[in-house]
Image (cartoon, rainbow, N blue to C red):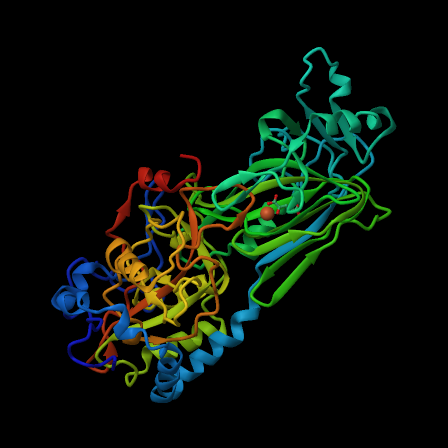
Length: 554
Ligand SMILES: O=C(O)CCC(=O)C(=O)O
Ligand SMILES: [Fe+2]
C-alpha cells in the first residue's frame, strides 16, 4: 500500500483543520519556532501537538473495518520497511540513521554511592539545605555542614512480640557492636519474599530466595531525596525538555529485602508496574558485609551490572535505579547478608511551583535531523504519518492507555522532537502476534490498550483475529500507511498483551505493552509546513484535578 494514495489518511495542515484539533498559538517573539508555555502559577498547561483521534479517519473507516488479518498476514512487514527505505529521500534516511545511532546513547539504568560518616550526626544533604521534603532525615534544624557523608544508618522494625525492648529492634549500620546482636532478630522478623508469576504471587526459592519486610513495619533515617539520589535519577532517567511541564519523581518506599548467602538470589524479571505513572525502580544497598549478589539490568543487548559485594574500606550506601520494564536479576549471594531498600519511582508534576528547564535540549543532532525532515518540503508534501517503535514498554490498565509523561530515553526525545514542531503525536499499542501461533504474522497497530486476554494464551489465528479486530480494535492506520523511522526491536513474551510473566509482584490490572509513537506531519502549504509554529497550546488548561488523576497514589 502506498502512503500517498488518495484513499489513505493524510495529516491535514492547519489550513484545513480536522475535528478535535486544537488551534496553534501565535509564535513567541523570542523564538518564532518554539513558544514557551506561560508561567502563570496555579494552572497547568499541557503541551499539545495534534491528536490522532478517531474523527481523523471517519471518511475511510468502512474500508478499514473490512481489513482482515489475512490481508496483511504475508510476513512482508520487513520488506515493506525496506521498500520504504528505498523510496524515501536523503533527509529521511539521515534521520533513520541518526535514530539508530542514538539507540545506545540513552541510559536505562544508573547508580552510585553515598559515603557514610562514622558519627551520629544530622545529615544536611548534598546541598546546604534540604531541597526536597522527606519526613525523617531532611531535618530543617540547623546543622554544621559535613563532607556530604550520610550519618550512620539506623533501621528500626516492629517486633512480632510487642514486649521486645526497642533496643533489640534496631540496627545501626555499618553494624556497630552495640546493635550487632540484633541482626538475627531482624532476620527472624523477615517474611519470605514472593514474586509474581503468571498473575499469581508465588514463593519459589528456585526463582527467588530472599526475605522481606513491608514498609509499614520498619523505618529508617535514610532518605533518597536528601542524599541527592532522586535528583541524580531525575537528570539521568527522567530529563525534562525545555518548555514542557517539568516532570519530577515521587519515590515510594516498597520493601526491605535481605538476600542471604550462600544462595539468596532473584532470577530474571521486570518490576510489576503499580501504576501507569511508574517508570522506574530504585534499589539502595545498606552497608552490611556480603559477597556476590550483583544486580544486572538489561535493555536490548546492553547490560549494566552493579556489584556491591566487594567490601570497600570506606563504608557507603550503594544504589542503582533503572527503568522498571528492563529485565534484571540478582545473582546469588555467596556469603553474608545483602540488605536493600527498594523504592518504586513514579513520574509526576511539580504542582507547587512551575519551574523551567534551563537546558535547551533541542540542540542535539537528533533534534536537528527531525527538524530538517519536517522542514523538507519534498517530504510528505500532502502530510502523512511517521512512526517510531518505542525502545521501552509502558504500563497501562484495561481502560486507560500509556502515559506519554513517562516516556523514557530516546522515546521522549522523538515525541518531543516532533511535537515541538507542531506535529501531532500519539502512543499506540503495537499488537505483536502471539508466539503460540505457528504462522508468521506481521504486527499491527491497536487503538486501545485493553487487557482482555490477560489470562489466556492465543493459540489460533482465528482467536488472534477476533481479539485484535473486535476486542482490542485495530488502529485505522495500517503500518503500511506510515513512514517508519525504525524497525521494532522489542519483543514481548505474550503477544501484545505484554503482561508481566515474571514480575516482582502479581498484577491483574496493569501490564507493559510495546508501543509506537505515531506522528502526524502537517501538509506543505505555500512552501511551508502548515501549522509549524504550533508547540504549546495556551488555551487548553488542564485543571489541577486532572493532574491528580494521574498521580500514582490515588
Ligand atoms: O535487590 C536488587 O538489586 C533488585 C531487587 C529486585 O529486582 C526487586 O525487588 O524487584
Ligand atoms: Fe525487580
